[in-house]
View 1 (cartoon, rainbow, N blue to C red):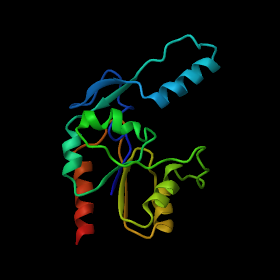
View 2: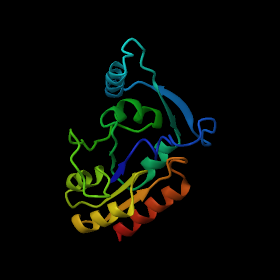
View 3: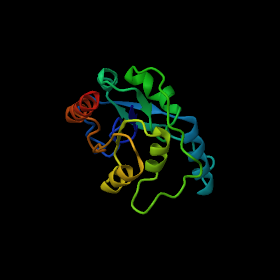
Length: 180
């Protein structure tokens, strides 16, 4: 399985606003869950009458075929959850994918461990997985080594660049080693 985060790996949100990375296009999206949360924030700030602005999302349509060509079953591991199938998958030309559902409220993760990590390990249930995210650290890798009984690759993607050719090569090489 290849567990995919959206913001960071697929949407290089941390790139300079005026310097969209090569190959990316700008999309304006208003996912319902995000819009509802934004309306709550605006109301808390006394700005309930202000309209909710769509998100600026940068996506590279070439990532869909590149991901589909990898020898993985693709799974969303993003806070977009099922909305990734509605908003992100069509732009990338991907089919509807299963997604990891996050607990709400988010449970406390051990010190230094990303909040997604324990839930991903529980979801994987010992199965081999690769995970791409921009928040992965050494603490997450150590936690997975200690708590996951199957092979796992935790691959951090720079949120200023998104997925690049070297990331695809790393994923393909890891999958090839697992197939041996």
